[in-house]
Length: 364
Ligand SMILES: Nc1nc2c(ncn2[C@@H]2O[C@H](COP(=O)(O)OP(=O)(O)OP(=O)(O)O)[C@@H](O)[C@H]2O)c(=O)[nH]1
Ligand SMILES: [Mg+2]
Image 1: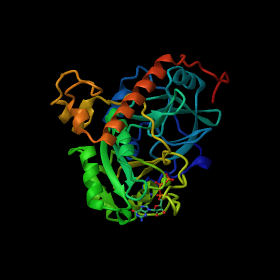
Image 2 (image 1 turned 180 degrees about the horizontal axis):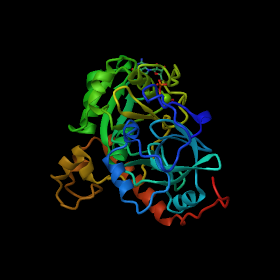
Image 3 (image 1 turned 90 degrees about the horizontal axis):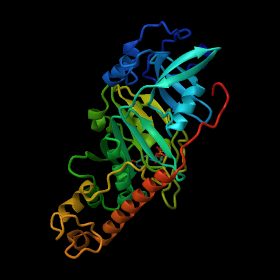
Image 4 (image 1 turned 45 degrees about the vertical axis):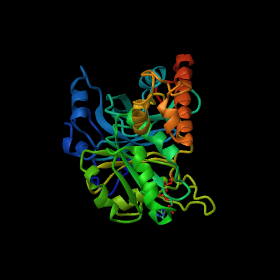
């Protein structure tokens, strides 16, 4: 990593600048640990018959390059063609939070490989592809504002997506000062998210957020912020960092919609020790295809389903269906919509042609 390419990830990463990376450098474990290196990563590296390059973490994703960090410094890196082709053919790709192996060649830094992930959050892209939102995440902070952004149906999509990735969930309802009925909205979301999901109403601008979220902010943890534009994700990043380095933007006065201020996913380290990934606001969250939308995945539906006449009831038009009889019409409609959408996504995937590598240059 050359000195001209240094970028600090956040104020809390060590400022020390190192020289050119050398493959013979011993692993700087304390430095890597500061950006989330853990036992899973160490085991993945140890399991390799041979290692080409040194570990670094993808901390920013841009159109033409990725920014990687080795715990000491950051640098732009390109994906080696062999890896790019392999990822493309398997429908995979790199994401912020990934651990990669990098090596310098001819003055440029190249990503040779990536380590197996502990988790991957993804969503459908609209065509048959998926968008990888973040990798190796321990906790997702689902952020929804209590102004006009408030939508239990949308939150339900996020819950399904995060549960499919086996990532811990925390729901943060921001802008309590704008809530129409804070107690009723909290109760509604608590019922949706279930008793095991921590739920908070927080003013993202309030320094007290740090103490509230402290249980998830310890060193070695990686969190991702998910939610619509304008809900206060970057504001929360700044509050947790204790500065205003992340750009934020006012929402539209007439409908509270955000202006898509954040345009790239990026990982920062917090004074508390954890890594936090900020993401651009999502316009429309489509299910990624891995979600569980069986009745068991929805607490209220699962309970009603126990009283259905038939054990294999599909909650369509079967006589004696307790779900159809007992579930509010809007909730039933959303459940069916999610089921249909998931089936359509999975069918499209099955029918999609196998992807072929498109680029022929040696490296990219
Ligand atoms: N009233 C109120 N305003 C808030 C709160 N949290 C954030 N805001 C304001 O909401 C606006 C949007 O905040 P951002 O942090 O830029 O929102 P974002 O989710 O990062 O939006 P994108 O980057 O577009 O995805 C800013 O003007 C913040 O000051 C809150 O709890 N209450
Ligand atoms: Mg933002």
